[in-house]
Length: 251
Image (cartoon, rainbow, N blue to C red; front, top):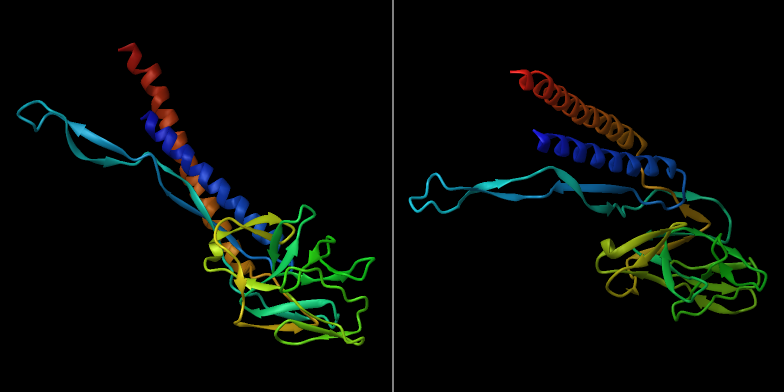
């Protein structure tokens, strides 16, 4: 009976984590290139059930296994492309297809983003909204000095002064090796980045979020009902325990 309390409580904890994930998706529905995240739950704390009754030598033999609830196993990011929105700004870029822009943190680490809402810093270098350097195909900062330039579909940038640079657009063998670190940035947990090929760069466009508001609202209803079901289990077990303590004890 006590096991029922733990099982119900664990179910409520998982639904709470799912609710946090859905709430985060909905709050970023207007965030450029935001990717929907989902929680993966699985049965946990599996234990073997042993019995002596069916063994002539009174030895313990397995009669199966039992799960003591569910827990959060992992998270999954849906990298499906969002809708491209035209802005007309020359410093806005959208990747139509696979790939990520390469960005450099202040400590020199390379991270990645699909958010191409860029600007120029005081030195004329291409940077993100947060001021992080956007890198070229050779890992170098991209100096433009002016917004008077054109970009081609392969990421090449040509200024009116004749200078040329190529955006460092990369992809990965397994996108689930990417980890969100905030500000629409991703770090690579395992593997290596490689040059992307199956894409077309769109200047004057931004990629929207891939969150479907209707789907997320339906998930919120499902989570709420599941949470309430686990809550009722806890209440029922608690009432039964109360009767066992207060009534059975008097016999």
